[in-house]
Image 1 (cartoon, helix red, strand yellow):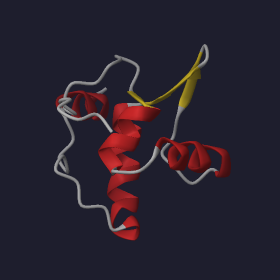
Image 2: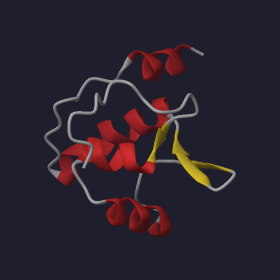
Image 3: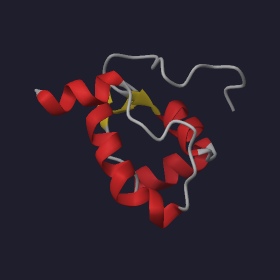
Image 4: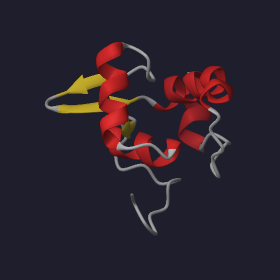
Length: 88
């Protein structure tokens, strides 16, 4: 999982990719896929063949859900793009 990658620099302007969500939550990619299929995971949009998790919606979901998942994340503060989404 993304050794040495800076999680504060997302790959896309649309939101986090499934891989980025998996890295942030310290979960396997398959877990994020399963959550998407069952409706448990963070809100997403599909653009072409790629699923994106919009920044603001991801962080809102994270705040509601992280205690239930016992997630201890080094990046527990939303990056600027998530905060900007809240202001729009």
